Length: 66
Image (tube, rainbow, N blue to C red):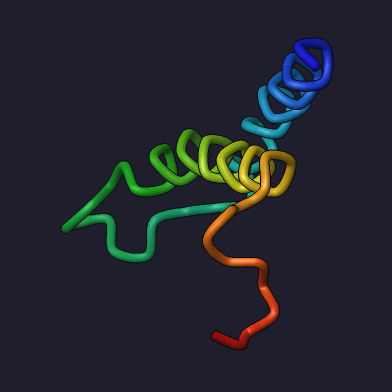
């Protein structure tokens, strides 16, 4: 299991230069570092989603009915 997560982290580290290259700030006057935050934060959110998919949620089974 640890090898899976280390592989995921390695692939996202390789993806950071790509995201920095394809993204740019829309409004450089207000937030010139937005593309850096985007490139650094999206892997953490993706890992959280993967963790919840593997772990599963006990309260919500995704069926949409109560």
